[in-house]
Length: 324
Image (cartoon, rainbow, N blue to C red):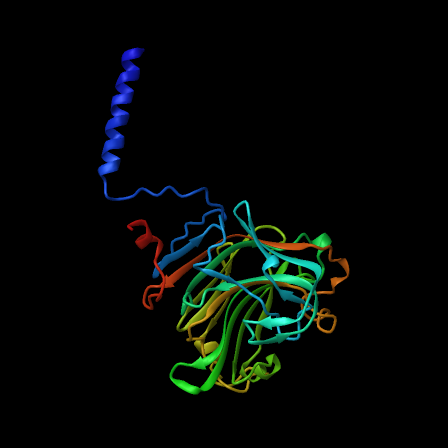
């Protein structure tokens, strides 16, 4: 017995010595939960960010301090974002938020009766094309009848090649309190406007898609390439828009009057959770009568894959990071 122990110890020392001299680091990933058959590998895409939310990564994410136009009854605050036990939680809580300057909106914001939570990619972590995935779940339906929780890309900025043009480009996954078995898949496009209704001349590309309970864990994904956008739930393709679909050929699809391009600008990735005001709640988000505060939506992990034909700038891929 003593001889076997000494022999085992000897080989252990040999293995440790070899590992110490090996310049290639061995990275052991923590357990990963997605859905049956998930591989996390996609032809033509390379994984750049794999965030398991073991902490709040300030190199990647910034907390929002604005609100959703005139539609939201809450304002985004730091208190609306927390990471607990490997899960990002976005929170809506009934609490006075006093008037103050919003860095995101570059204007003074008034008083709000609720705070809520938003995270967006840092200024140097914008993306153009690629695949974004998130494992998330909405609040329990019995205690949440009016809310919007999301994953989306967004910019409303000056077009690189045409400084006189400001383009609103947005690709959405939205969960709503009054549709607990559906999600909304959107493309929104507009020019030189901040008003949603003015985007309708470029088409109403919103679809409410029945999937399964959204207050259970689901993996949502957006795949964005120069010629198309595709939406997935638990690995199943549920919606696709190609450039041909939105180009008004042979004619526009009402209410569309003008050709819509597939988004092509650098954009932020945003996840947020908020409650609609009384004016819009019965049309969008849901009536808040059954909300129990604090309400939380949960994000288990987030992944960003670059489109290899359009490499991401300002990012270090997981592969590169493992070789540092």
